[in-house]
Length: 215
Ligand SMILES: *[C@@H]1O[C@H](CO)[C@@H](O)[C@H](O)[C@H]1NC(C)=O
Image 1 (cartoon, rainbow, N blue to C red):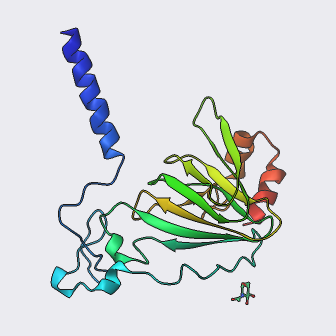
Image 2 (cartoon, rainbow, N blue to C red):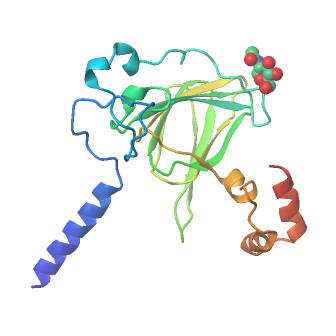
């Protein structure tokens, strides 16, 4: 009896884990039909007779992103929105450009694990584990180094080299999503009340008002 309960528990855990990832495709491909109004989990499939090589292709990832902004960084995404052939395939890509000291600020991908490769320069990267440990795991990476940010955990990348830096990330979702911590907490629309945030962060309300005014 006890072994049956253990087995059922294991099956339940396995099912829960498998649901945390995108479902397996049910056909060779399902190129996203952006003109379809069908509501499905993902995007409706274009008639396969209309599919062309261009639906599986994206150009321009050799072009550096414009990093002239306060953070000194730029993300050039290649998700299903840019590359319709990614629909249902559970994978995406992004080029990241960093000015000297440029930062991709702390953020999470609700639907993807990310594996990053440094193509040029030197990056400090890190992520924080969930409660209660909240362990900060970080490393300085050089050209050719690879680092993985596990699904859903907050992470950041900072250029700590002398020149510009470039990295390429692969992500385990056609639509990884991004939640930038500062924007979500202090820049939501409408705002979260400063009572809530003052108590959550254990600071005076005027500190919160100042942070909210930055977004
Ligand atoms: C880069 O972005 C800045 C700020 O938006 C803009 O002024 C500048 O013209 C852009 N540079 C290029 C090469 O597009």
